[in-house]
Image 1 (cartoon, helix red, strand yellow):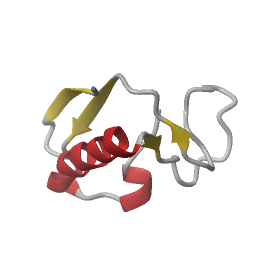
Image 2 (image 1 turned 45 degrees about the vertical axis):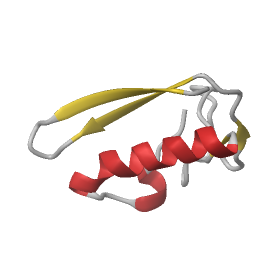
Image 3 (image 1 turned 180 degrees about the vertical axis):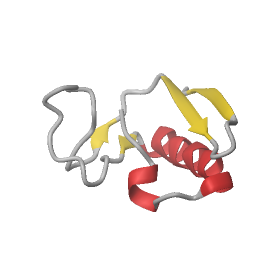
Image 4 (image 1 turned 60 degrees about the vertical axis):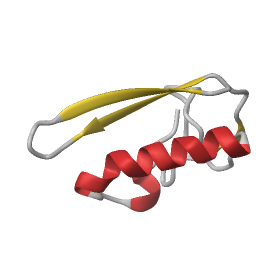
Length: 79
């Protein structure tokens, strides 16, 4: 689990597009970027902290929430 927003900040309407771009980069490079400013994953060991992790392939779920109450989810299938 990682959060693109921790790296780029609040980007409002662009946040979904940034998440898709980051996910495609993750699939291409087989690396999951860490969640910035998250110091410990003691409550959830699946959160990527401090250093990038190897991505074994598979599916990526992207959740996006807008300030006006718009919510969307997208699943990207890795090859």
